[in-house]
Length: 167
Image (cartoon, rainbow, N blue to C red; front, side, top):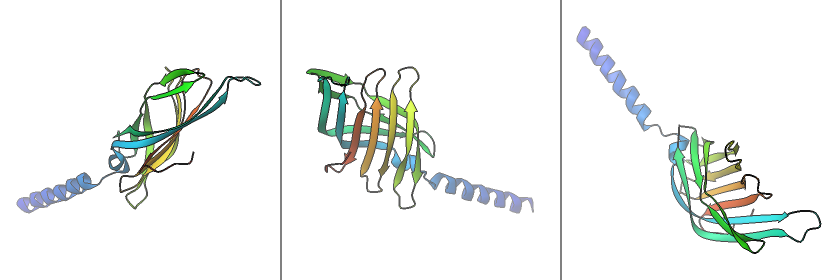
């Protein structure tokens, strides 16, 4: 009887643990490095009546976005740096990592990146992010980013394949 009980426990633990390992949450499905195109748009007049304005609308290709699973339902997204010309001078906006972005699976193998807002208390970086990763690897992310005390927001869209997005 004892051998039968131990055999049953061993079989039960094999079934339970192997089914847990094969379950794949939406975060692990989203994990990876994506080569995307990025469209950046900035429309900002620095003060009313001022002619000093940022008017940027540019598209870049081969922009790397990294997504790392931190749990079954959350990812960390690293957005690359951005360089643009504003008021005649080149400006570099550093890369940013957005922690604990919630994700949901939709049943078709696609992963929805839930609309999420994050502010880094130390740097003052503000990010709003949302999007989708399709089961064929296509990705679309929409972000609004404000770095520290900068008087402007960057609206960016990361997308793959390389077609023209609408911001």
